[in-house]
Image (cartoon, rainbow, N blue to C red; front, top):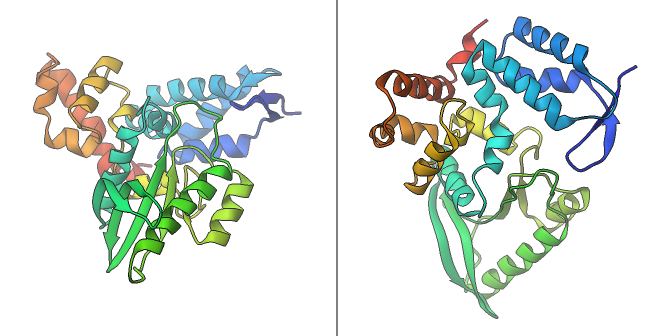
Amino acid sequence: MQPDIVKSSGNRTKFSISKLRRSLKKSGATDKMVASVINEIRDELYQGISTREIYNRAFALLKNFKGAYASRYKLKKALYELGPSGFIFEKFISRLLKELGYRTQLNEVMQGKCVTHEVDLIAYKDSERHLIECKFHNEEGRNCDVKIPLYIDSRFRDIYAFEKKKVSGQGWVVTNTKFTGDAITYGKCAGLKLLSWDYPENNCLKKLIDEAGIYPITVSTLLSESEKQFLLEREIITGKELVKSSFYLDHQGISENRKQRILAEFEILCTNKMDHEK
């Protein structure tokens, strides 16, 4: 019988080997590595173990195989580390959309029928314009409930009401956490595009990041917290940007050997090379 585990929300659920296996496989690890990690963790389970403890153990075991596997496994946590404010997350989403072929503008003030609104992000593609609001949380377990899309929809409708002609496109809500069931239901009904860590299932934020190879520098298993903060303050937000501007690592007094290891880790992630390893 599988033990109960405690989720970040405080709720209890049964431990699922299949869920752990899926999350480990998404890191790029081979079947043999995944089986090894699962066997280790299964032997260490106990009633009431937290999902955080399971994650930390799996992360450490993957890191023993290859840092890039652990980095990809860490992606969800790495997005939380883009805080504490939401500005860096907005810029990360802008970088991601550019990689996906959009032209973007950040923090634009737009006139509505009733009031003006600052829109986090505007994305253009195929003659369409999308108004995007980014909702960032730096604490696990805090999901976006129905109030978020409800409020954002009203703001977008005010902007559309001011515009003299209908502009093709859609309002988006993007979050690093999850949407509640009611939030998803309202988003569908109102015609909003909702994008979260795991929604929509076949085109969620995690999948878009993996496919584009645009990883935040916070996924690194080799950079220290202070080094990550130094880079973020200089708007080096993604691994691809760091590879192109590696001289910033010299500013931190990082040795040439360690510098090459850091860059190699991101080159593997950004080119998805480990997906071909068996």
